[in-house]
Length: 439
Image 1 (cartoon, one colour):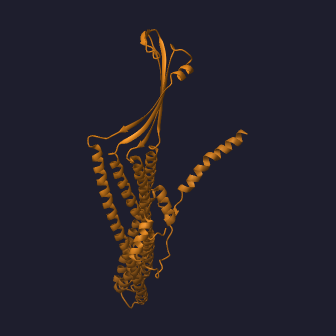
Image 2 (spheres, helix red, strand yellow; image 1 turned 180 degrees about the vertical axis):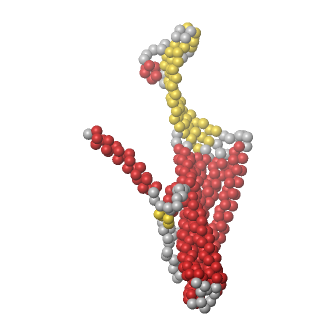
Image 3 (spheres, one colour; image 1 turned 60 degrees about the horizontal axis):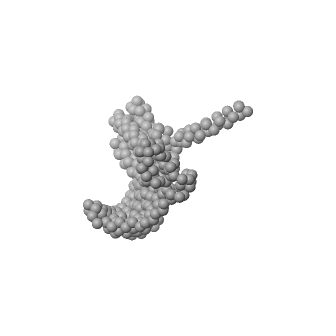
């Protein structure tokens, strides 16, 4: 039986560790996994969620202020020598054991609607912090898309540089043998050898850029960097015939789907109610209060319970508080609230303009990226054929190394430019889709 218990306990303790270990060993990610991981791990996303939680507590606290207050207290004491009997109020010279009990209740009936307006202020502030949280997550998602596409772009560029180096390497091996036999001009051999060294440097540079971009992505994901990390390629290009949105439609969809504009609108509403709440403090406040109290003494007649019942006192009353002069604190509070309203109006106008400009820029970037890709595709096709012809002529001895390398470099550079343009188009299309409400 003891062995069975030990076995069960062993698995209970080790299974979570094994599960964590499997998760921590994950090294391959796709774009969706990166976005979800960033939203869960990123410090800014976590702090924005905490800000929403704090604002929710502020709203609950504002609502709780409408509830009545109830408090109670009890006291017990021993007096010796010459003292006053709490029951008879006579001065006596003996030991007195006494106690008091009291309950107080109070409820605010009216204070110029200050509490209700404060609740509305906190309600809009809570909605605003929720939209701020969405805004931070929206921006983080766009940052992840950008960083992810930069990673796979530089990975593709690195692969292309390695392919170009391999092509040069094969030519170099062929020319090395021919140079030993004196079958070619030495200059041709050394030209290609220099090109091979240049290709090696290009590979090293591309690999450094790739690793740097991976580190940038892991920083957003808040995970450790390792050389084993790899990322799923995105090979599907946007449809050339995709309908191009107009600026107004994209702006309206972005205003609805993104948290940026909604957040500042809610902050504006919150500032309006903060001003109303501050002005309501000019009005009198009316509250209803009540109390129960009793006392006990060992010099009194009857038991403890009898004395509590017989000495029970009750009270109820209304309290009207009229603000007359308070060091101009209420007036200063109103002035502060007015400034907050003006700032909120400025933020709203500025955010609307910025969003309109951003959506216009998104469409311009998308159209430019699309046209650039299509033109580079035509260029690569032309240079590819030109390089094929030059390679055949060079191997046949019809052209020298300078002409061959010129065609090769033009084809190599255009191929890399096409890779970059391909992912640039994907990036711009995904950003446009995100602004348009597609997730």
